Length: 202
Image (cartoon, rainbow, N blue to C red):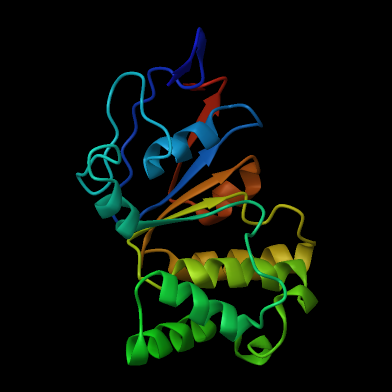
């Protein structure tokens, strides 16, 4: 992917297997965010091709977006809403209704250990719990691919451990692309890793 004369990603060749936790490592500016934007269809490649479950994000954007979810480094949450209310709201946006929506919200609360705080406003939660809410909303429509960007950034050691445990429990159940600059985190959570440096895999 080029921006004018600048190559944000160059000659990147990788394949992520179904059910694999794949770590994409690199410092800020290495090209991780550009890769995420290509995978989600937010950007188009300048050359080469990228597919998600055999589909092109540029030619089949809706089909690709129904198969994946992106959890950004800074959670996008409505902090004035309660946890359960926020999850119901997001489930509705993703086309779930009635018993399907209730079941999806209950499963997300249980999977991400949010039952005890389900009636609390998101703004009253710790950063660790907010990250759990961000992960929980991502799973409401049962995506096959989870793209997580710096999932433990800004968390204290106990919160990092808790979020790491949640991600570890998802291993094998979903395909996970873990983007991080933390080598220890990538080693602990990933089956395989690739390292980007200035847009090139090293």
